Image (cartoon, rainbow, N blue to C red):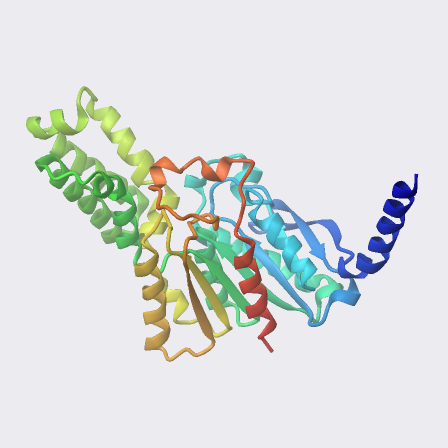
Length: 359
C-alpha cells in the first residue's frame, strides 16, 4: 500500500517537473494546390507552442519523386517532431506520384521543385507564417528539387540537403548502373560490353533533348546490338527485339530517368545565395558519397560561397540509419519499406544546431 502511494506521488511529481520540458505541439492538416491548380497535395503542418519558439522558422520537406506519403517512411515525421521540440515548425506533404497513384518514373525533380515552390507560396499566404523564415529540406533526389527551387527563389532562408547528387547526371547514372558489376568484380568481355552499352545509352540521352528522338535513337542502338548474334545471345538470351525495345524504353526513356541523366548540379548550386548545409553518410549504398560531396564543395569553392557546411558522417547509410558494415544497394533495397527503421537521431541534432546558428 505504502509502495503504491509512493509510486503515485512520484508520477505526479514527475509530471509536474517535466511537463514544461515537453512542448505542446500542434499538428494539423495543410493542403495546397500544384500544377496550376489542377492537383491538390495533402500535407501535415507541425507547429510548436508559442512558448517554445525562439526564432520564427519553418522547414518544408520534399521527398524523392517515387510515391511517398507525408511521413516518408517515418523519416520526415520523426524530423518534424525533433524540429517541433526545438521550436521549429515544419510542413511535410505527400508527393504527386503518391497522390496520382503513378510510378515515380513519370515525375521529375523539376516537378518536385515546382511543388516545393507552391508549398512555399501557400505558407507565405498563411498569416501565421508571414514573418517566418522558410527553409527547405530534401533527401536524395528530393535534395535536387531543393537545390533547383533555392537557386530560383531568393526568399528561401536556408536549405538542408541530405545525400543528394553532386556530380553530373551522366556520371551519377553510370555509377548506379554499374554498381552490381563493380560489387561482383566481374572482369569479362561481357562486362566490358555491358559497360559500353550503358555509356552509349547515357550519351544518347545527353545528346538529344526531344524525348521522341531519344526513344528513336535508343531503339536504333538496340537494333544494332541485336543484329550482332554473339552479343544478342550473351546479353538478351531468347528475348525478341520488341521485348528488348520495351525493356530499354521503360528504363531509359521515362521522364524521371531522362531528367536525372541530364541534371547538372553546377547550374543550380552556383546560384544558391541562402545558407545551406549538406550531409553525406560514408556508408551510402546508393551513391559515391565522396564524389558527390566533393562535387558540391568544388562548386562552392569556385564561386567563393561562404555560407555553407558539408558534413561527412561516419557509419551512416543513405537512409540515415546507423550502419557499421557497407551493404550494396541491391541487397538493401527493401530497407526503406521496413516498418522498424531506426534513424540516427544524433544527425537530426546536428541539423538543429546548424539552424540555430542562422541569423
